[in-house]
Length: 338
Image (cartoon, rainbow, N blue to C red; front, side):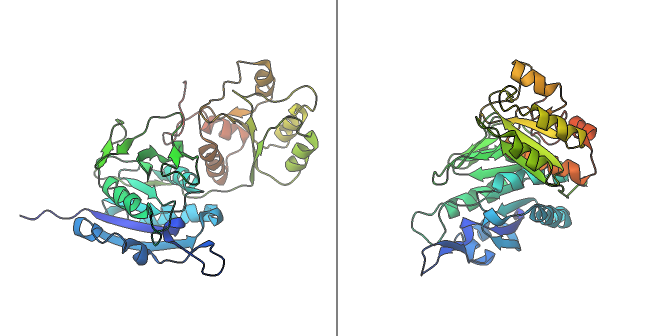
């Protein structure tokens, strides 16, 4: 009696995993087709029934929010036909795409695994094949998450951050446990969401609004904040000091926050601390901003917070709705009450 091979849909978005060096400039450029990429791992077809489709072939620097929609809708269209989904994607914006898919694919019951490479598959020492193989293996396991498989780690996608442009383990999950690790084979260690057999997706696949993320630095001129507020934006994220400190004396940013709130612009406050969380009640420089109606992002990554805000704005949410949205855990992206 033969056992059917697990079926996987591979969605191709370009990135280093599909690049070659330009012969004239030596610059890496997207050149490979998805079949050429998968041809570097011929053993995959012995273990899995694989179909591939191309969404976009680009450096992930050029990924746009509409690509998040296209990927999520491509998964939804084929959702019932495959056991799991693997997305080949550039590393630079992979955490944004992973976050977006976690919100778009509500009630997810199967694995959606993103991976890529630091070194193109045609070059000596490439990590492309190992990452692709491990991603495909992970996509057949008993869990239902949007995750990133890269190097030795299996990470929840909306808790992930890229921290290195050259390390094999390019991603971390700074404030949330790893879902698993790559040992001799992929192993799950976190008791996360298991597969659901049956059931449909709850799709909300659009991301809208002009959102600006501004890093607060010593001496930031409030006129810069004023110019941003007047630039037809729909949302603002202030990347604050520590647990949510916003300058409120010399070069105070509080008047700008007040102006934004009067204009109906939701103002979020995140932290620049990779391993941090916003606890704005701890210090006076946080409390005063909090009283103006800013929305703390808790222990969310900057990527997850940015995408969540665009996801909410695309559904027509106003400031009060955004406040309620960020008080909820939608897809495991934030620790509520932690």
